[in-house]
Length: 243
Image 1 (tube, rainbow, N blue to C red):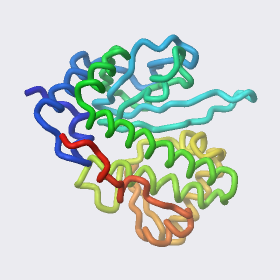
Image 2: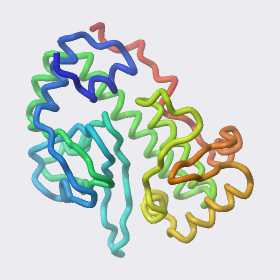
Image 3: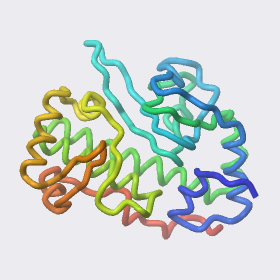
Image 4: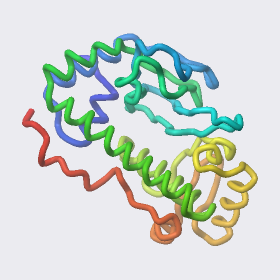
């Protein structure tokens, strides 16, 4: 049976049947290598493909009227990219590779058969979409109501918790692989301000940095500072259809 990183991701929530895994693996039959910085999809492009990310990192973003960039989402291996595009003919956001990556494009209409034949997979996609929406709502509230330090703390915690969903080896440190400009464009700060906040958190013993890795030294204090709630755990699965 073909393997699927998307199936592995969904299996973290509930065990999937062989048939469900096989159906999800079909979405990854045509992997495409993408170089860092390459545009995968532009805002307002006609949407014909959706994507599963197999390797690397990808971001979605929009350009604001003043020319600045707002990063909406950073995607990790196993993520379904382009869920927002399922309801529009034209893409509401741009997608670009943050690193060398492998994406698996599939025809948008392939979702129809998947959802018709496997209602539990459909329910899991609905669950993940709503978890993503709540996480983005948290960030929106943070942009409008919290300090720069709180935004950076919440962002680091969110990246940490999302990576732990699919990597059980992550305990207290992770490879961020984002520039300070990219962090700033995610949380509405300049790269200079991000740098200042990260250095401040290092000095206070909240985090440490080494060779591009971030170690979270005091999770409880970081959560308090960032007014942070982990939206990637304690998910209610009781309502899911039986597999």
